[in-house]
Length: 216
Ligand SMILES: Cc1cc2nc3c(=O)[nH]c(=O)nc-3n(C[C@H](O)[C@H](O)[C@H](O)COP(=O)(O)O)c2cc1C
Image (cartoon, rainbow, N blue to C red; front, side, top):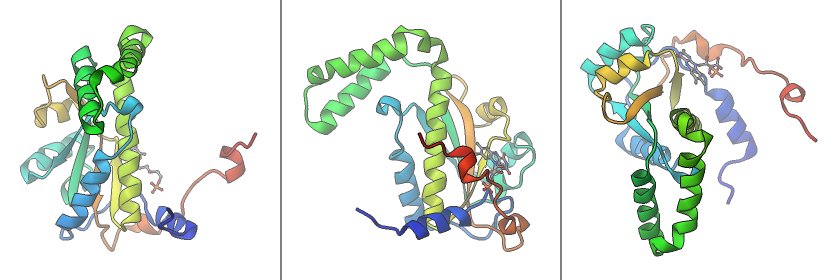
């Protein structure tokens, strides 16, 4: 199924940029935001395990507290929706079992049928070297969701700024994440560009095709 022309896709990806200045008056509509949330939830992850929470910070007071923990970047308070991606810290058998149960229920099969799948996840994630790197693994999954969010909103004609310039430990305190088993990984401001954001007019700086695409 093809819904957008190749040119439309490229045009939207050229149109998007890391928005430095949002128009604080312009808010994303309820319907558009519902589609964006759906896109976040539909993000793929390794084994499908979704080791994340997407915290949509709507409280003006909380956003105010996050600004000094974000290199004072104005996007935090001026954007329409501010999403903090929190990755799961570690994994245990219960998490994997609960996921298998959900999978079985959703697809109408017995959990026993998924025993091989479960064993593979247990062995690969909890049995070997990966065990000590599970938070990094979960953070990588969050970055996939971040990319998915950015592309989705670009296609919708909505602006975004990925935000790594944040202090994760400070965010955890402000957002009450401490002790929850999740930690701040990265964030993304979403909304509409201010008409006077000069960054919107800058040329894209990208390596040439032949420098990064290697055909073998
Ligand atoms: C993971 C990630 C974190 C980023 N963090 C910030 C940030 O904290 N503040 C900011 O203004 N831009 C941030 N950027 C934007 C990049 O600088 C920008 O994407 C890059 O220069 C390419 O420009 P473009 O996105 O406008 O095409 C981040 C980008 C990524 C992918």
